[in-house]
Amino acid sequence: MKLKDQLIPLVGFLLILTTSFVFNCIQDQTTYGELALLALFSILLYSLLLTLYTWFYSKPYLTFEKQKNEYEKLHLKIKATVDKLIHKQRFIDQNILSIIEGEAQNIWVITTKLANELNDISLQNAVRKNLAQGKHYTYFLPHPENLHFAYVKRNLENFKKLDIYKQYKSQIEIIHLPLDTQFLLEEVVIYNPEQEENRNEETKGINGFTYYESKDEEIDTLHMKIEGFLLTFLRDRLYEYLSNYGLKYAVQRILTEFAKFISDSDKLFLANLLPQRKIIKSDYNNFIESLNSNPLSKNIAKDIHEILNNYIKAM
Image 1: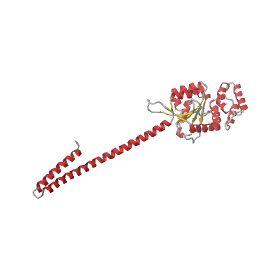
Image 2 (image 1 turned 120 degrees about the vertical axis):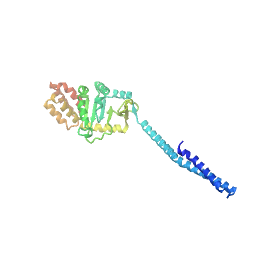
Image 3 (image 1 turned 180 degrees about the vertical axis):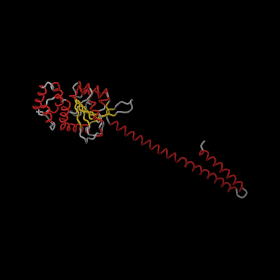
Image 4 (image 1 turned 30 degrees about the vertical axis):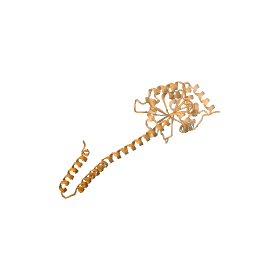
């Protein structure tokens, strides 16, 4: 038994002894009425001490219980709010994502790392399968001089060494975004960016996703859907950038990767395209004809056409 639990009986016992001692001392000098009052006073004093003791020791407990109840209510309120937000957000499982990816012809990947393509074998196989079916990938990366993402340059160099890139490089486009681009998410994938949203059929039309990758190996990666204004705004800004600078990056890539196969006159034609947004079709046809007539560039003419095809000016 704790000391505080023994205190009240002890005080009561001392009070009785004190009352008995006083009674023995004054019983010959007082009336029975006065002695009764003394006994009543002793009982009231003991009751008062008991009440004070109970209040004193129960107040911290009551305060703790009150705080505990308030915390539990706050916890439940926060949990309900989080659950509500999660319920409103749309998560897509891998099966639905595979269907969407299977029906898409054009895939944009906005990434600050370009690491999954290097480290995730299953992703490499999925990308390889899509490329083998004639699909196109456009990777939007941070600017090479962006010090916050310096490792992307190294990852890109390693990515270009992969067989998947060497085999399907004409279907893969690399775009560096402006130096002041703000990346709010590590990676976003957009399927069918040229289409509009289809709310009736989830696997149709434009679809955008980011993902949450847990450190817990038992928890699968969650694909979080991006939709509505945010998706169309992102798509439109990227389209605008592609329209202004896509041809420039395409030409720079051709001059870098295919330089040894292209004649000086064809290199000059490509260099003149650098400040342009579109290619005049007649000039383009002459360029392709020149590539096909050159034994060195004949074998890569198809790859170059795949890279430049989107930038031909419509008649």
